[in-house]
Length: 103
Image (cartoon, rainbow, N blue to C red; front, side):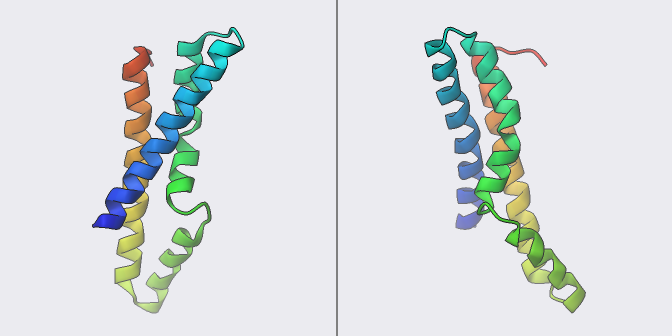
């Protein structure tokens, strides 16, 4: 359970932290910081997912174990993938709420 929570917040932190930092960079370069922050949040969702899963596709290699009849590692990896996806998505929604961006 601890790994699921950690995975969620890593993905969340990548999206939120990267978006806010990018927004500061946009402000310093005299671009529209709120628009740029919202766009970065959308673009960083996939990187939040990959970063939270360890930066490699080892998680997806675990799914191959289903052919060996091992369901426990597969279920665990699917839960971690779902937690990372939810963290990245909620991070993106948080940024949209923060900058009041419309979809």
